[in-house]
Image (tube, rainbow, N blue to C red; front, side):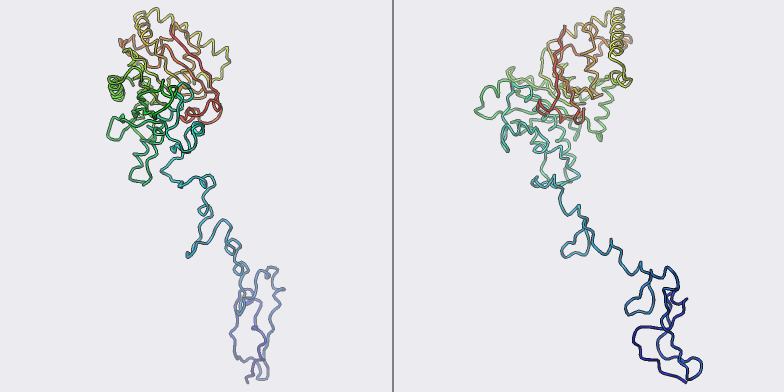
Amino acid sequence: MTEERPPAISSIVAWTVEDAVTGDELPRGMWTVGQPATTLWCPPPDTSQVSPDISKYHMTRGGNHLIPDRYHLIPHRYHLIPHKYHMINDRNRLIPYRYHLIPCKYRLIPNLVPNRDVDIADRFDISGPAHMMAENGAGSSPMLIDWNKEEHRRCVAACLVKGAMVMTKDRSRRGRTSRPPLAPAWWESFGFRRLDVIKDGPDEIFGAIYEYEPPAGLPPRHTSFAPRYVVAFRGTIPTHLGDLIQDTMIIAQTLPGSKRSWITRKAVAKLLGGCAKSRPVWLAGHSLGASHALDVGRFMANKGFNLPTFLFNPPQVSLAPAIDLLHPTEKAKRDIYTTSNSVKARLGKVLYHHTEHMEKLFERLASWAPELYVHERDIICKGYIDYFEKGQMTTMMLSYRGMFFSLIGDDEKELQHLMPSAMLWKNSSMNGDAHALQQWWKPDGDLSLSARRYSYP
């Protein structure tokens, strides 16, 4: 005998304890058990007695089974959109917050969007000599330059070298970006125009020739010592094989015989052939470029042309950095150099032919005093500091390598780091990269500069 089920007052079914745990359910509807007059009606089980962990289950609305609590509530990280994400109109995806707002340091710079192909250091309006821009007023071009001030001459020479570097980068970016080239601002801002480039291959530019075109009506102090031409050489670009080869030639002391050396000497000689003496040719370079400027400067000085030369962080192969790694006391360091100078003097007496050759060379080069800009923490150019400060005038012309070459019959091989005269500018500031070019277009107040002139004899 069947009997109707009592009217349902809630969504309940007959469960066993095992059913409660597994979430199984019995089908709804009419069903018969036992005697015809008996109706089996099981109330909902008291799930609190099933297991101490049953609280993690809950009833799903309109359903007849238990779902673990971890599936009932959406984890907070999915339920609420994190603050760092935002919705984009008409789109169904989230974009990280860091792409929603432009970083503050770029917010006030017009038309500037971070680009992996553009280095902020290549932007003249951002990384150039801010103090000179402030002196001349924002947006004024070309800037007024007081050529009588060493600070202005140094800043302009360094910026022209930077222009040669950025010009090379502009060429490598060609075809990948529609942005205008960044290099012209590094010379046009000072009243220069690019006359030519110096290269040893179709795309291997390592220098540039600039011509100064002063604005009309400038007072004499702005033009009296101004150059007519500036030949600037860039530093090493690590991805350029030609630059790396030149670096090895500096270590081997074979740079004067390189193809680039021949090209630069020819280019500068051509300028001197049509240049009035009242408007000189300047040479400038940084790192590898300083070696090129030094090479052509020595070559022209040997022919009687003493060209103003600006050498920024010129490399010098020396044991000085290795000695400093030992952290010797000042007395120990002084004893090392005293002993070395004594040994050179004795060897010079034995190799008197080599000594006579170097004396004549130093006499020809004595009137040429290039400007050497070095940092005392830069191991690449530190050798020049010890060369001038620790050396003795009688032994400065001698080097162990030069004497070795003399022994093997190569007495004509000149070591370009041997200079009789120079103006040594030493920066002892603890800020920034000691080998970076940008330190040299900063004002004197930002640098801990000391200067000393060394002359021969």
